Length: 512
Ligand SMILES: Cc1cc2nc3c(=O)[nH]c(=O)nc-3n(C[C@H](O)[C@H](O)[C@H](O)COP(=O)(O)OP(=O)(O)OC[C@H]3O[C@@H](n4cnc5c(N)ncnc54)[C@H](O)[C@@H]3O)c2cc1C
Image 1 (cartoon, rainbow, N blue to C red):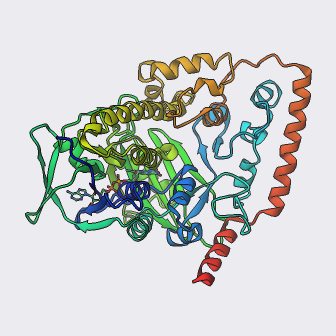
Image 2 (image 1 turned 90 degrees about the vertical axis):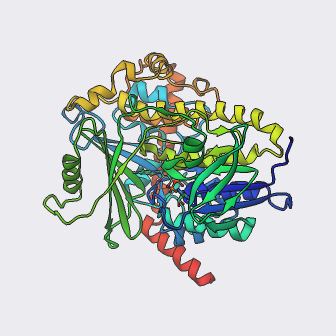
Image 3 (image 1 turned 180 degrees about the vertical axis):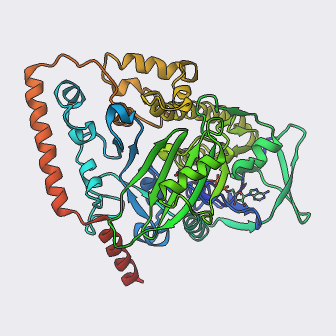
């Protein structure tokens, strides 16, 4: 029977559920044939972590029509301009606290690439400093924009650090108010299947039977619909990315101190520690491979990082993390997004990125009747599988490039049989040739040549220095001087990060 798809349910009211509600709600806005409901359990909390985003979030929020000032004030936002990786290289060779930036500004947009110049004669300076102004802004803890900029625009590219629970709340209010999304609280206790294997109904803990045409599973790690009910296998990637556990904590920030605008990712013997500063508090978490470090050592390391090595009273949250993704993200009349679809360690903030990206894709390919399901599902799954594999490659890159020798973890992460053939081939090619945009031929690559350049050359990848014509060298030297001038001017013009957030807050309340 070719039934129309009109009634859509999203199970889960975390970041994934509400991002999906806004994307889908916007896509069908004004169409009276659709109704969209978000169902959330009153007694299963959201995961409540996930504070780092990538620049795509700006486009997303702007497309929803969310006021940037309101978002910044209500979600305790700080600006994020880079990820600063600390100690990802051997400290004996590169110094204690060696570090590099993966910047959000792409290398300066000249007609020609400055990377060959840097490889040839620029290595007295970091790659990031040579090709962009932004590392300088991060070091000086300056905002990426001033109060006069249009919403969602700046002198430098930026993303956000945010309070995850407040973010979900804002997205929820927006989806209900602007896109007519309905919200209900039920604990789903069972999922009933039709004879063809698709989902027929959701059964609630208080005995209600709820039926819809299309089901979006945003139920978090439990993957209640796609994983449990539809039995879509989980592709375990823990042999490639071994980090599988997190300890998290929140600590107050000193408001008199400058506010960092980078996520710090500091490597340790069996993983790394993230440190994200919001205006009032830091979110800090230690992730580790449980195969190589026990929980007591992990706790000790995190307390040491926080400067409270002997404090037994600090409450840490312990979160096991499955590593991998569902073999299909879409089966029959059900699509999973967010943690229900997949997860890998939070380096590079790929989780909200993949959720946002999949929710956009779903909204753009929403089925209107059941006959469309199989074709759309096949396309969606093919794209998502490709994207997940490339995300895993990009995360893996950070480990493969490391020359740390100080623990079994770092050696294991570099083992050739844990690296995909695609990444291995690219790394071989990049021994002789600077990465090109043509090395990334699909728009489903998620991370592009610019992202790879920052990581490769931040981690000193030894691409053979190319032969360069004197004209190019002359041109490049002038461009590098130009970048230095722009950086100097911006450092004089831009407000401090903390000052801008304060100004935005004052402007927002003055408008109320
Ligand atoms: C340690 C850690 C650090 C992270 N850091 C980052 C980061 O910096 N950047 C980033 O992009 N991502 C990060 N993530 C991922 C990020 O937290 C998630 O992508 C994001 O929070 C989305 O989660 P979710 O909405 O899929 O699931 P959840 O937040 O878990 O929400 C699940 C929802 O499903 C509902 N639900 C569950 N079962 C039922 C049921 N039976 N009936 C009804 N409702 C139900 C719950 O009530 C809840 O509303 C991190 C994750 C972890 C574990």
